[in-house]
Image (cartoon, rainbow over all chains, first blue to last red):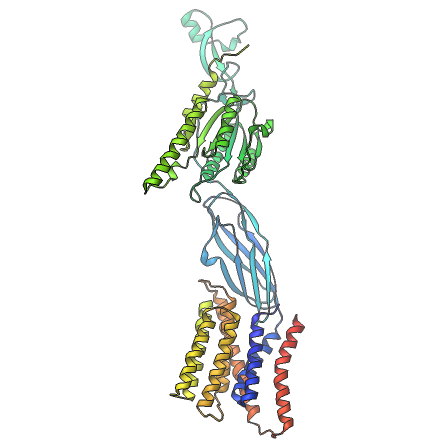
Amino acid sequence: MTTPHVGRLTTFVALALLTATIAGRVEVAVLGVAAAAVLGASLRREAPSVTTEVLVSDERVYEGDELDLTIRLRATGDADSVTVRLSAHPALRVRHRDATVTVPLRDGETRDVVLKAVASRWGVLSAGPAYVVAYGRGRTHAEAVVAPAQVVRVLPRREEFDASAAHPHTRALAGSHPARVAGEGIEPTGVREYRPGDAFRRVNWRVTARRRAMHVTEQVPERNAEVVLFLDTYVDRGPEGATTLDLAVRAGAAIAEHYLASMDRVGAVSFGGVLSWLYADAGRVQQHRVVEHLIGTATVKTYADKDVAFLPARSLPPRALVIALSPLLDTRAAGAIADLAHRGYGLVVVDTSPRPLLPPPTRWARDLAQRLFLVERDALVHRLAEVGVPVVPWTGAGSLNVVLAEVTRLHARPRVAMR
Amino acid sequence: MRDLARLGAALCAVLVLLRDHAIAPGTPALWQATYLCAAVVVAGLSLFRDGFATASGVALGGHYLLALNYGDVTADLGAPIVAGLVVLHLDLLDLALSVPRERAIDPAFLRSRLRHAAFVFGLGVVAGSVAVLVATVDWPSSTLTRAIGVAGVALAVVIPLGMLRARR
């Protein structure tokens, strides 16, 4: 297409020549002739044709990593200037001074414009589209091209997490958690008197010699467990990069990595405006699946009430340890967590509370509002504790140990059954 | 690059205005026209609108015409230089309008634009000189000559428009 420069020069030529004719001044006609010569020379040039594509150096990066976004330009015909403007996701921070670049391009030349970007937040982010405007020699012709966006998967930052407490329920498959019942295994738990049927190789000869009666070593089998990460995606509060959902996703990734390394089965449920789930499984592939699930979560505003009954039964296997990651700001999520507790799941709430993010109160009204908010929140935590749901703030490595031990103890106690 | 182009365009305009005042020094009416012209040029440099850019070039041409009249100049042999400067002013204004503001300037682009600016200025001067040469020829003063002149003017307008349409 032609540029406004053509109209500008044409207008100037016409006005100069008409004025020269009317005023009878050849000098003014000279201005018009000069402009006409430049216009004619420019219009003789071929319009350039540019093809472009966006390339990313890494399709999977971690938060805080730097990556190269390359815009590859190929020209057919000389281009006086090619202006490239990359429109990337805000979390994919391209330095402002580099976001727009203008370069010349010769016929047949291929040029890569490399922009440095920093992945500032987890998620599935779009690198692009790139808007390219190529001007021909003389700037009388221009072509606009849009290069489609590429997808960059930014994985959550690795957080340290470790938990050594026993699981409330283990499964019948081999793993690394000692079961709560004795059986064949390698983990000794005690010594007792020999009973008919005990294997001869389990006889503890030292104790037998000391007590003068046959004793055997009791063992427990190593089992694996099922863990379900239950993400509350109703609300997301806090400054960019440190929101409650950011904390939940990073904590979830760390917890999943820990349990999958222990040969456990890990699943995930995103509970909010949009329900999504990932069935529990084990192995390294599941690690990738869980992280993909986590980075795909987003808060979607909704007024609809949701219930855990909407979820498929396999997404919450019976006797699974459910680790709920929630800021406890939405009563619907708190209700779902209480519902899970009533259904008999071993349940821990990891509080991704916005409390540390609250600004210091500067006025009495704000102070009062914050105090009311905190009182309401404490009341909610207390109500959850009443139905046997421990709430623990996320502090990284070892933060769930005490509370997991408590959950295991609660599930091991004898219960009264109604007949 | 945008700011460099604006600076270059402003420099061209200043040179044209100084040249005009050299033709007709100390003319109060020309000074008043200069203030008006400067306002239009500043608008063209700062408002980034096509209309103001065109008006900027036209204002410089009008100022030149006024200077020629107030200075009682019969023939200005420096007209090709003024033409080159005005055309370069328009070219640089177009560059300022079409290139986004950016801090990092590609050296190759800067070199290419300097070459292009030299080409535009040179072509303007050469074309202007040819026009002056043609004008100095003692053409017979007749109705036919005037008709040919008017037809030439019409063609100078119609031909670029025709080429434009053909490109589309």
